[in-house]
Length: 368
Image: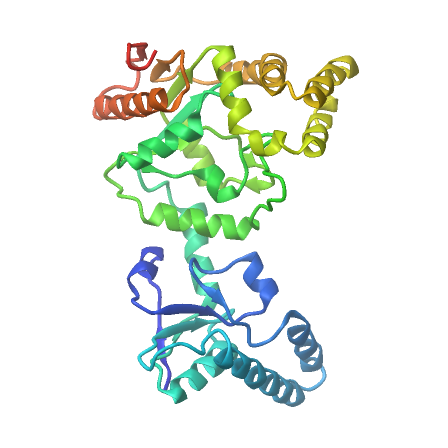
């Protein structure tokens, strides 16, 4: 009899000890959402699954017979393809939508070969239930801090440096595949499905040490087309903030480098600028398009910040409590960002156990 494995918590996934996690569902199901690290070895294609589902409405017997034929054919292809080089001691965990016939039949065949195959109890639905509980029904699991600042202050770069120094960080923009502005989607990139984002976020939260603070970048309630779950969004709004500040010229130079992938494609850049038409006069947009066409990327970045992004940030700041700390720098080169990251960590350490109503304003030789 095939062994069945249950997940009691999201963090259990890291300790199961299987050699591979196999998603037996259709490619469309896998693309929308799958367990982290799972490989797609569908026992039916999208079309085959639809065909069996249609037949099931008129004859359960014929649908099951067709499904069995398709399943064995596709599993045979996987055995001769993706699984051809697996050793005799291979230990896969297989799942389908609810841990039923698709994963059970697949695991049974693998077990007959001699592999120690198991089925995930409850399938993808059991996993999804844990994700929904974490994101929609429970409070955020660790003390949250927010890294804030105007466009071009290097927040994402600082976030990465904090993580490299051992700080707890969740990079929401990396999980969402988007930088959070009209220029935030890299050319040719595609954001994950909402469910896929939520599952990656839930795993990141499950891996946190609840006794240590975690730093995220300030975001709106949506990153591109991805919506932040209410539990996280509410935690971000209530969290203490560290604000980064830098002169406009330094920010413009940094942004021109940071968004080089977008500006490299002048057609994409023109399309992104055109998306700002509802917010600015035609004459202003024409000036920006002329800068873009001329390759004046730093000047364009400065103009966008001064007329579009900075005013919006100022209005947002006016609706929030003051930051716990303000860190200023005149330089956004790599070494300076290292110092900024160290300053952020020092503020978080210093504020632990203290009142959040004691603001810190720092501009030192290292940071400024």
